[in-house]
Image (cartoon, rainbow, N blue to C red; front, side, top):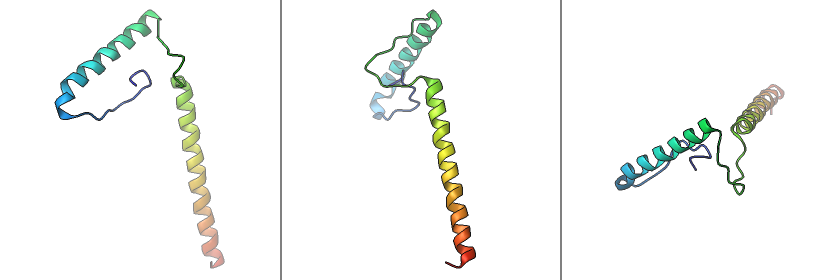
Length: 83
């Protein structure tokens, strides 16, 4: 999950120290792999590269923005018509 880019996890309070150490060690390993140019990728993961995730995110935001604008325009039009 760390390789996939998660930024939060839910854990039991009694596992906090262990989880922090585990995530930190995985982050260090990933940083080292990137520095050495030996990033491990699991072919079974269906995770787009970070650039692709950013593109998808902005497409979703743009789509939602356009949809919300459409709703606002539609509501304004209906009010003008008296519906």
